[in-house]
Image (cartoon, rainbow, N blue to C red; front, top):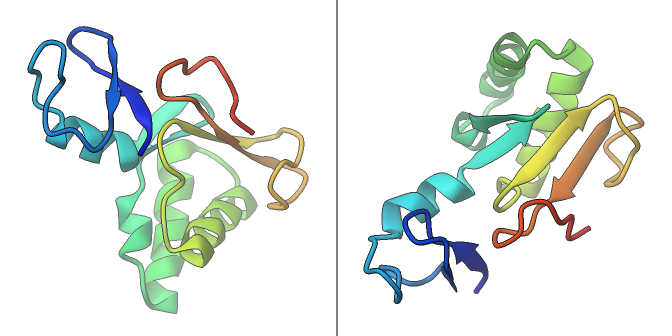
Length: 126
């Protein structure tokens, strides 16, 4: 269980709750979107298509699609796709895959994966 901030009232609530215990806002769709979104160079992106890329051909297409959508280099797009495919999961919550920074997860000298706190998105958890 993780705490997230309700988009309606901004109180901290469980990501497992069906609705906010403070204001009643339905959370199911919000949580799905939250956990399927990654930030790449500061722009939120839905990368679920990478998870659905099971064959090498689909993964190659995912690399080119990511490159086109984010304007990153082909190398960076491949590193990101390889990371998501290897983990078989998107990094949960607000994550920054930052091309051009210090290595934090062994993805190479140009890619950062920064886990963001749902309640305080300005705080890096690791």
